[in-house]
Image (cartoon, rainbow, N blue to C red; front, side, top):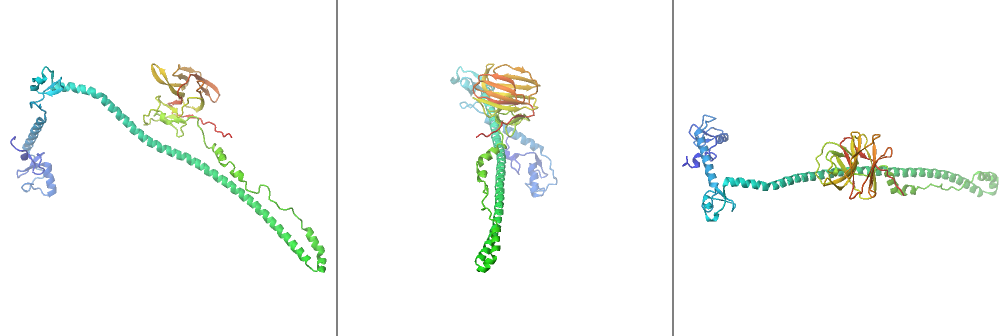
Length: 463
């Protein structure tokens, strides 16, 4: 077999080593797949070599040839493997040893040479095993860094998609808000133009009636004046005969007061145009609301749902959100969008029937258990119990006479006080005293599906 060239073991159709060979009655052999393909193209069962027709549609397998081909391929693979094995560049011998001093593979002749005199050697397989272990240890930090980078890239991809989705959603909300404002302005414009046209129609009708009455009076006076003037031009006898009647007719025509325009007959331009934009803006305050605290959805825990107006929050199904640095490290919580580092600030929260909530402020870093931790001052309602806690103090329970419905949070940064009170009874719940530093943010926590809502502040216009 070793003397046969691979051409003798090649299929006459595909010219490759036989695969699953079959033999025809004419003694020619082919790959089974090649023969079937040939027959499908020719549409006749004939030998591709001698064109003799075959009586069998499924020729028998040529097992002897199959075994011969497999043995040939196995030996060829071994020769190729041996040929690819690296040899010593100096002695053309197999590299069976590893020089620990030179950190390179060597052959047995190299071991006994002067170049490697008194050097330490290990068998290739032992040295490879040891060095693989060392390389794995060296590689581990890179693998961990690669894994971290891949996770960060995944988060970046998610963040990029989140940016796109949020931008589109925010744009729709902006358009909806302006649509409402446009509708209000259009309705206000229509109402004011309607009022102007009604005044125009009313005053035009009044002028029309006055003009019609004046026209009737002019016609009557004109008739009397013309008749009297005709009598004045008559002959003396005729004039004197009709004098008495003419005088009576003139004297009986009453002399009315001179007609004049009534006060307010003109369009009240000042009423329609005076402080027009201010009055519309003043009226608009009935259509708008102002929240002293706006919740920042970029800080919300993935299990929280912030309302579209960013003024209420509740627990919900976990969302796939980017791991951005602003997101609070406190579970089930959200932060206000604006922080405070001076002055007095107050906001009211409708806790309603929510049975698990926290209200307070979050901010400055405080040393706790030898670690820097975000400062938190809050009151907690859970299991029908009210508790106060701060990272700068201890945790204490508070007496609770009645269930809280609305809670006022008031921060006086400069005086260092944070107070909580029952808005319905105007009674104080608790006051923290601390010298605040840095910036403090309103903080809300809940694990309940009933929302906690920031109550709108009263809006007024002062001139």
